[in-house]
Length: 198
Image 1 (cartoon, rainbow, N blue to C red):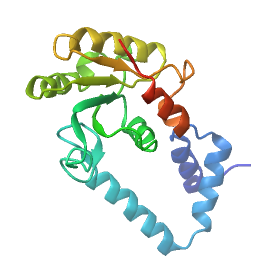
Image 2 (image 1 turned 60 degrees about the horizontal axis):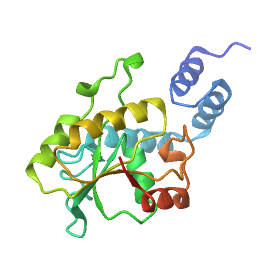
Image 3 (image 1 turned 90 degrees about the vertical axis):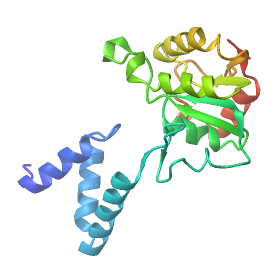
């Protein structure tokens, strides 16, 4: 069956989302069409507000409507321990454990030469600057256990060693190839508890 052009375009747009195949995109498109116009207008306002109001925190590079973000501005956080993550969704996964009370740094990805992502494409210089300005007693490297995650971990270890005496990584409670945002809270909590020095 051929779709009318506006419906086909809507399905194609939904298919651009990560992990959304043709059938899921079709279901979402029909769901949208079944909503009344006020719901659709509200949904589009929410999307536009999120896109225009959410920026990167000038300190940790986490996504936030505030600058500095809620975590960086919290006086209860231990700023002498920095947990390095690849993306904001990994930070959220760690926050859900309620185990970590330090600061964060979001790299904005992982080193991946195949994808054209090198160290200069990440926020590594900002991290080095933070370590140079503050007395950080521990850096926790909390990256995916993929090839790219391992390469980034080794690269960071080489750069950070002269600036911080204690560099740790998450314990191996995480299966190889696990993406942090899909790990459950208990696994992440144990991995944080059992972190090891690099």
